[in-house]
Structures are given as C-alpha cells and as structure tokens.
Amino acid sequence: MRAWLVRGFWMGLFHGGVQTGTSAVSVYSPEAASSIRYIAIGLVVVIGVLWGALDAWRQLDGRGMVWFFAALVAGPLAGIAGVAGRSLVDQTGLESLGPALTGGAAFTALLVMATAGIGMGIGNVLPQPEESQPDGSR
Image 1 (cartoon, rainbow, N blue to C red):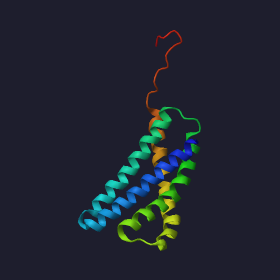
Image 2: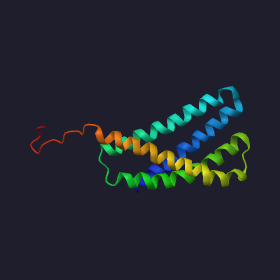
Image 3: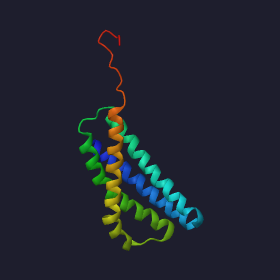
Image 4: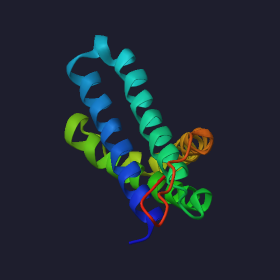
C-alpha cells in the first residue's frame, strides 16, 4: 500500500477521533472542555512530529511528497470521521459536513503537513544509525 495513503488514513482517523473525544468531554464535562482541547491538539501535533521525524530518520524516499498527499487524504477524512463521531455524541447533523469538508479539512491538512515538516526537520538532524560492514564489523 502507498505510504501516503497509510499516513493520511491514520492521521485523518486520529484527528476525527480527537474531534469526537473533545466533543464528548464538552457535553459531559463542560468545565474541562477548554483544557482538553489544548491537550487533544497537542496529541495530534506530537503524533505528526514523531511520525515525520521517524520517516526522515529512516530516510524514506520522497517523504515530503508522501506527507503532502497524506495531508490531502487526512483533511477530508478527518472531517467526515469527526462529523460522524460527533453525531453520536452531541447530535451533530449533516449540516456540519460542509464546513468540516472545507475549513476543517484545510485546518487538518495544514496541521498534518506542518507537524510532519517539523518532524522531518528534526529527523534529518538526528544521528543516523551506522550501517554494518559486510564482514559484520562496524
């Protein structure tokens, strides 16, 4: 399977799940909703940075374009998953799908690209593992 599709799928589902989780917290515990939003977005950022750094550290070919296409997949998928999940929690209707597929998808795509880009920058400066010599010595 294509690397960009896997990354986009999982980042989109993760962000949609985070949207659903923050919505559930705001319904059942409104006083904790503001702090949970910051924690949730922090989780999305950390996952993107770590995954981007891992790709750079492993020297994945074309990793910049992989993450670009992954962001294009993650944006609309997160919008759909977020609206579907929130509809189970707080009765969000189909009228929320339009904004989720435009502004929400753009935000998610930018968040995925930016965090992966930062992660790739970090991964590029990490020391690369030494490759073993053919005779087994380092």
